Length: 369
Image (cartoon, rainbow, N blue to C red):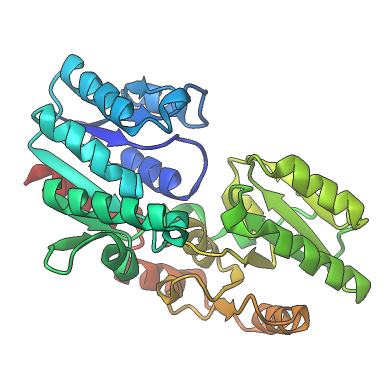
């Protein structure tokens, strides 16, 4: 059995983490076993499942977050002191450079860099750009294998001469295909929702990049224009308290609900008319694959890669510079479109490699080489 060390920030219910977990569930565990390194000492959402599947969890406390050299040394010691690893698989964008360095010094021969993003907040300052330049060069020199979730993510982190393996942010399609066939009118336990109410969901961490303030202001616009809607936020993050205060200040508690972290994302999508994603930037969001698998349309920022539209006529891009009236019109238009059936959605997703059982075979090839 090959042991693969997955280097992640945390293993909470977020895009890249959910994708890694889906691969872990699907991979042949008689041949491959995952272990994980976290850069936090807190308990994470997937801990129990990882341990139940035979994985080990190693933690580097968050106090080392801004001490990259000490963090690198800590990772080196974990690799050296915990048995032989056949590969180290790094998921932390530019920080991958430090992790690959630790892996190289620890003697790991297969060192995988995985790009999940198409932009980074550090691009805005000279120090940040210098950091990116140095770490990008380190990644491209030290990695033996290069994986990206899409073309844009590959170009963002890797040099043009690299042989990039594209593994889409696939999902267990079977969980999502038929969720709209089992609608429960009381699922959200919100009496104000009727058959005419537009149910909007925004799913993801409550962090600046997700632009949740935009969504709250959009909700304020819709309420002022007497639109029958309800907006649900599924996820958690350090902005949660500030966002709840903003909702209260705009008198929106009757039309906005914070659901917290949820494990039933497929049901939330099944009971939603539209997914809202006004992010400032994204890589290739797993939630957009899940939404299209579920047959739930999405209205999203045009700063998200066009690659996320899988050709199911379920995604509408809008500019963050557009008026809220434009967003509302486009949202109503895409909700009103005729949706293709589950079998056709499955065929298209599988053809493009977004079925987890297709992606896991690609990953096994990387690990086995």
